[in-house]
View 1 (cartoon, rainbow, N blue to C red):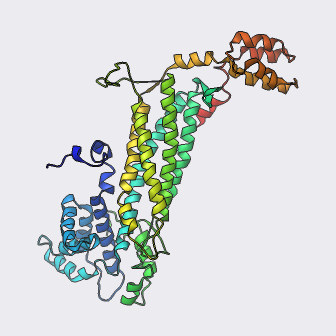
View 2 (view 1 turned 90 degrees about the vertical axis):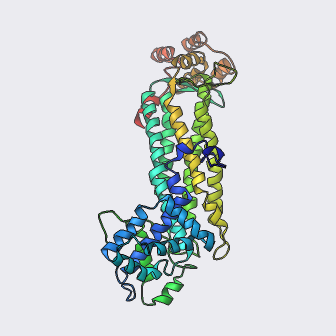
Length: 473
């Protein structure tokens, strides 16, 4: 059967494939192979500069060729590695053999070909598979964080910040426990979300992406056996932490990560748990926001811009459903379920290693992919929102009972006994109008200037410093 997106098992590669074009090149198996090739070549070139008598520094021409294999790595290259894996039944060894085959390519300059063939036994030298895999995962996650997750979050935060400023002065009835409460402004409620997201976004950005290249159980055993007098730990640190190569430079380059010194065969994955927990925290904030917007749409506080051709219900023609926020909530929940499993499972490995992390790690892109899908839904949904000031004003004008709070607070300022209890008796569980409150205010034994101030107060005016807080975000 011809493969088509409609036959995909995962909706990320089926229904939603067009929305995840920035995730797939980084987190697919092809992306993983590309990173493995990058790590192997980085280590190989660095070894040539280490001063080992048996491995002279590679020529400029050889370095240019090797770096081109990273830069030009293609789907065809990934498929060629998969063909080798059918024989080896070992994916990292397949990468090593592919690289050695590349050294023999007939298209190479003869001198470069001879040089690379002669040096090819230093490809994957002293490495265990996990040295290549853990650094490749780190490269994937670093790129995913910087180029996808933070980019989408920054767009969301900027959009919400603009909404907070635009709607800063529009009063809105609050609801605590689902009941009418002291008014706020639309912009201030959005500013609350922005503030939380800024803090949570920073936690994602602060996670140090770690990697190790220290051999089979973390002790440089094979390295020391091959070259006992060499400082392999410092060499490994330099490869891991030096800046990645730039096209215009041919000198030493590395992976741009942070060295993890103490490991078993695998990097312990604590940084991964930290990163996934940080992303899940952002997602939890956005689930909270998605549900609030859904409720405000239900109340009529927000209307949604119409799109030609869209249908809200197969039988009820009037429907305009908040589907972007519903999709976001569902996908954020899916993402968090996977992220929490990754976070709980990956730091656990029996003795010096077991293989339970391997298949789980292959789902990192799936876990974060659902987050990215949700961020796009939220951005699209927020762009459609329009404040329905008529509905907001109508609810405010029907909730004069919320002014029981300022009235009793002013009474307490002037020492009137039982202020809270009087207002409770007058307002609790009752429908209150201005006509009910004004005689009570007139009867209070407080200065006339205070009475006049309370008499002018409306639910729409009673928003504290909400507007300035919204504008400050």
